[in-house]
Each structure stands twice: as structure tokens, then as C-alpha cells.
Image (cartoon, rainbow, N blue to C red):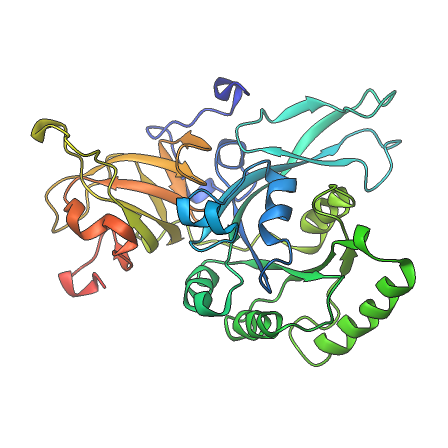
Length: 350
């Protein structure tokens, strides 16, 4: 377990929103600054590759565990580091760890002696691949800045949801896609080369044309360092608007109160999503509402990975506790909307 006290401190009192960037230490240390979705056909390794990079298993719900497939949107965050020793070769100089890892670490490569420095803090949105869950995938695509397209190398390309997911991100106008040719350990080299040609033919004329194709084994963590290299060097951090009034898109919601909870201990609904613009602060008081936000937390999956902030900017996924939101409206993912923190009229609350 890493000590979160070693992360950069956040101070709301001295916060200058105009000076914030995606790589500001107090931001990138605690908050993911870019959302990357995992898309592709069912059982092609989307959840496994997220776990290989972030160490977080995004399948948490009972039904998912029983069926061993992603049903709800999964979330995980990871920090990607690069060794500052020029003698440390690529791609081995790139390493990924959990979100609570301190911002500098000794390079684990034998004899290197360098220091791993934080390059990116990434939030993964793990989408289900089953055809009946396409609506859930589209919901997750709304917050993606880039995507990892998983294609299993032991099956012909494309599979049905491979085509549908690629069409979905094309509609969302995602410019940055990395194609991962997964399960490379299950086939021979000639088969891998043949499928590589199938992939090139499949993406011809699409938004993914020209995207890098990386052969990996997510289960064995083969070439995961190459994936980290491409995330850092192929996917730029988007330019964000920090000065406008905060606006949040909610893609899931839930009730955190346990059965039998005392009335005085009841808490308001919890909304999870991503900020579209602005900076959201702890105890921010929305206009036309009764109570302020009572906590801000980044949570990739319930109880699996948690950081706390004084403020939060666009990039990454968060959950917020809203004391004025009745828990009846937030339970079981029933609440999905956009929310302006400082709207001029109530009509701006969608």
C-alpha cells in the first residue's frame, strides 16, 4: 500500500485556476488528467489489459463476477512513469503503477540507478463488449479522450462488436486510438502476421487508419511497457477550460447508505462522472440548491482505489457526494444527467 501523504498537496485557499495545466504537480499527482476507453468485442481482453496497466480489477459486481464479463462501466486509474536515465532503453523505461503511488520512484531495472518520474495520470473507462450492452458502451464513450481498441489475435478480424465500437468512437470524433492485438501468446507468428493484415484492411478508411498496432498479451503483461510508451507519446493531453463555471456529466449514480442506517446518519446521493469544464471545489455551493458538496473522491471501483481532493478539474472520473440529492433518485445507476454548478437558471440543469 502506497502512502498518499507523499502526493503533492492541494490548497483551495491559494488556488489560482488560471495557472492550472494538465501537468501541474498538485493536479497530476492526485487526479487523472485524461480519459482512455477500452473498446472491442466481448472477451477480447479489455478488462485484463486495464488490470495489467493499473493493477485494478474493474469487474466488481456480483453478476459480473458470476458471468466473468463486464456489465457495468468499469473504472481504474494508473500513473505512467519514465526513467530519467538516458541509458535506460525504450520501452523498458516506461512503467505503470496504481494511482496512489508517489510521484517519483527508483527505477526497478537492474543496474539502472535512475529515477522514475511521473509522465501521465490516466483514467480508464472499461466498456462492456456484449452486443446487448451497447448502450452502456455509448454512455462511457461520452467521457473518452482516446481509446484502446482490443482485438483478440486468435479470432478473425473484425468481430461484430469490434466494428460497432469503432463506429461509436468515430461518431464521438475521437482522434486518438491505439489498437492492441491481444492474446498473442496463443498463436504462431505466421497467424499473427496474417491477422495484422486483416486489421490493416479493417481500419482502412476509418478514424483508426494509421493508428499503431501493438501485439500484446495482457494476461502475461507482455508489451505492456510498449502500450505505456504509446499512451505517453501518441495521445496528447487535451486542452481544458478551467475558468468557466464547472459542469459535470453524470454517467452513473448510487446510494451509499446501508440497510438499517439511522436517520441522522443518512447521506445524500452519490453521482459519478467526469467534469466537462471548470474546476469543482470541496464545499462548492451550487446556485438554486440547498446544500454544498460534502465530499469529493476519485473512485475507480467501489472500495478498490480512493483518493481525496480539495479541488478537481476536468480529466479522469470522480464520484461526488451531494447532500441535496435524494438517495432514492441516485440508487442503481438511475441518475444520469449533466449538472451546472453555477447555472443562471434552473433550466440549465438537464
